[in-house]
Amino acid sequence: MFSGLSDSRSISSPAASGDRAAAGERPQREARVLLAVGLALLVLSGIHPRDRHVDSRGRAGLRGGPRARGHGPPVPLTPLAYRLIFIHALILMAGGHYTYTEVPLGFRVRDLFGLARNHYDRLGHFAQGFVPAILARLEAARPPL
Image (spheres, rainbow, N blue to C red):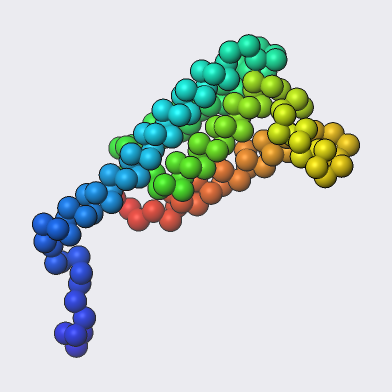
């Protein structure tokens, strides 16, 4: 009935399997680079923060990421997930280092749009809701192992 259709998954050649291995290695390499850059920035953000209490609370939030993935066998995330986690961590680190009301990027946005105050805290709140929601959606869409 479906003799004209072929299942491309059943065809395997050394070149095709090598391409898949190389394609699978790229996201892992990117994840390792993002982790290394993120850890370096985390160390830098801890040097002379404006408020040590706010900085330590931000770092507590960063520690939650590995704990959330600690259940079950390790499954690699998508490149989008790694990038979102990295961006979210940058927002938390900047907010922790400067305090959310004193982040320089927030002052630039305030001046650009003529706002009354620094709204960087809103970016942090948006990321606190958006990034976990997208990660949950990506996890729910993942086929079962």
